[in-house]
Image (cartoon, rainbow, N blue to C red; front, side):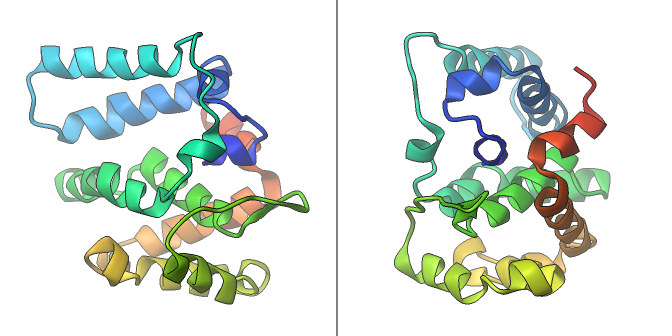
Length: 189
């Protein structure tokens, strides 16, 4: 949801914005594909199909529409890759942890003073509402709370070495400088 936080509103706009396209390609090529077990040809076809689907000029898929149950989507689609990546490379994957940090910022429910219409299970939305003051006072505690949601994640993500510090630092930077500014430091487009 870092693209939404940067003012991008459709999936196609993501792929036509060079900084976000670079991010997606980096995520797929360097953090997802290396931990999957399919053949190289299948993985290359997978990567190409994802970008082609996102870039379809006939579909104006709104990011806010696909934000439905984003925490569960992260758990299903990226958490296994995060865990596999950490186990295989013994380091935190930049793009996946950035995505998690941006997701936590997104779940604050506001952007530049405007309400973000969050759509998720009530128990999750209530937790983030209760933690709202932590966005301004204690990012480390906020991150620890989110990572500790073993009822959602299936485990306490605070147990993954260095993840809490990495995500906390990224949340702080996103809140201070924005997602696009942060990505410009990594990707020169």
